[in-house]
Structures are given as C-alpha cells and as structure tokens.
Length: 387
Image 1 (cartoon, rainbow, N blue to C red):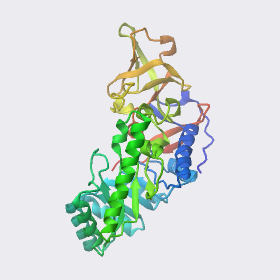
Image 2 (image 1 turned 90 degrees about the vertical axis):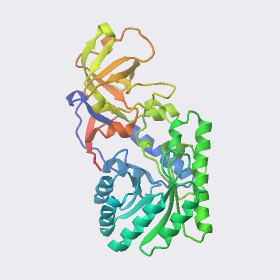
Image 3 (image 1 turned 90 degrees about the horizontal axis):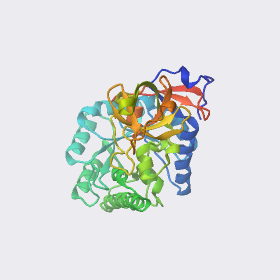
Image 4 (image 1 turned 135 degrees about the vertical axis):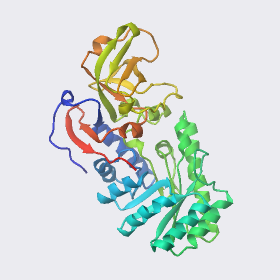
C-alpha cells in the first residue's frame, strides 16, 4: 500500500490544467472489483494502461485478488518491470518488429506474454524465437463479440495457430485471451450480463477445442471493466482483466456500471473568459487536456467533452464542455438555453471537468495530482507515457 506524502497545498496553488486524482474514490473503486473477484474466487490481472503509474498499481495489488498485470505498450512493460512487476501480459497484437524488445525483456527476467491471432504472425514468432534462442510466451487472441481483432472460437485457424506455437520447442502456448469491447455499447444490466457470459463461454469453448486436440491450454483470460463487474461466475476462467474501473469515467456511467459521483479523475481548469452574448464560459482546458474523445455522444446523456463540477467536486447544474479547441474549453448548458450561472463561474475561478474516457484524458498528463476527500493536495504521482 502506498502512503501519501505530507504536501497539503490547496487547489488554488496549482497551475491549470492539471489532472486530479481523488484518492478515496479510487480506493473504493479498486476495492469494489477486488471484492467482486473474491466473491467469485476469481483472479484479476489488472490492465494498467489506464493508470500507467506504479503507485496506483501498488494500490490495486494491495487490495488483493491480483496475479500479474496487463499492459498495452512495451514502454509500459519496461516501466512496470523496472518497478518490480515481472508477470506481464502485453495485450496488443504483436508485430515482428517488436520481437527484439520482447526478447530483451524476457532475457532480463520478465515473464512477458504476447498475443497474436494469425498463422502468419505465429510463424514469425516461432522463427524469431529460434533465431534469438529465447522463449516467446504466446496467448491466442479471441474474437468473442465481433468488436475488433481476434480469431473466433469455432474457426479452424484457432487450432492451426495453436499447433504452430505448441510444436515449437522455442515457444510456449500460455492460453487464450479476449476483450469484450462491445460491452461499451451496452445500455442495461441484462445486455451487459449476456455479453459477459458470451465472453466467458466462448473463451472457455476455445480453450476446450485446443485441449481436445491434445494441446495444453492452461490459461483462459477474459475481461473489460463492464463485463468484469457484471459476470456472475468464473468457472473455467483463469483470470479477468480490467483497467478503467480504478477511475471510472462518464462512458462507464452511461453504461450504468458506476455513478458520476464515483469518478475519481477530473481535470482542474481555470475560467478565462465569459461570452455572455453567446451564453458561453471559456476555460483553459481544451482538447489537449481533456482529449478529443466523445464517447458519450451515442449514450443517453451526451456530456460533450466532459461534465462540469465546481472546485469542491459538486456538479454545476447541467453544464458541460460543449466545445473544445486546442487550449480552450467552451462551457454551456447541456439541455437548455437558459442563461449560465455566471456567479458560479467567476473569472479566474477553478472548475473540475469529469472525463469521457479516463484512459484518453489521463494520457494527456505526466502526473496525477493526488487529493484527499477534503480536496487538499497530498501528493503527486508520475506516469509513464509513450510506446
């Protein structure tokens, strides 16, 4: 468990825009999934691409039910390995040009697993392992919902890929993995549970097909934040992966897996202008701070580029960041043309913007400014960035 420092400065001492992390909200979110996994006798392999921060990851590990981590870049793998995390799944389809870096991490003692979903890449991985005399640990990526990459559980290519890896003395077939990305389009508990079950059941079916062919397939890895929180049993599943649950965001609130009051990340911005004739307030938080993600656009509530809170983390009526340029955010009402409450938006005043997509917004910043439940600054935690 990490311990905050003794810095107790106020928000008014900070340079805006900056990324605030509410420590107590984050810990409650972490404990929520850890408790759910414990109730299902499940194991969590958290996806740390969202936080990219060893202090946050240590909080996740301390909460329990964790065995290894998941990353989305080799830079993250290097960073977390340097900070003592050695069991790492690199959960983006591997390409041959990245295999030298994979081999280097492996030789230095990192238990790094890579993913692939084609015969061609499997053959390239086998050839590279033989050439470099290093063991490449491989997981086959499954398409469990038609969302993006992966091979279907009933596709003949699944067994072709498994045989190529299993037949190589220089490679190890670790298992199968999938990500139910379509869960981000669910809008009710019933459809979310149905997709979580589909993700689980098709992954188990894929592993069983491989085993029936006489090939060992020890690991079944599934997960997304919505399905991890919705799943009702994990029989046959080795591990669950999720990442954004640590912070949550407006997209997750729109799916129904959290409330906006549980979102642990916000961007602190300053009010820089009033455009009363257009019923707008201008801030110094544009898309360079908030990101261009418009993930709530297709949901029941469209928050534009983010929801507006005051500096004490209280919602300011129905205000949203309705427009954004590089360094400017434009605040207006979401659902009416009533005059803005300018008395709550004073020039030079501070506001907090809840993000649509925590991963994308956090990626704009080099550090978290950690605040307690009294909105006092208690620490700063650096983040890794890049690929």
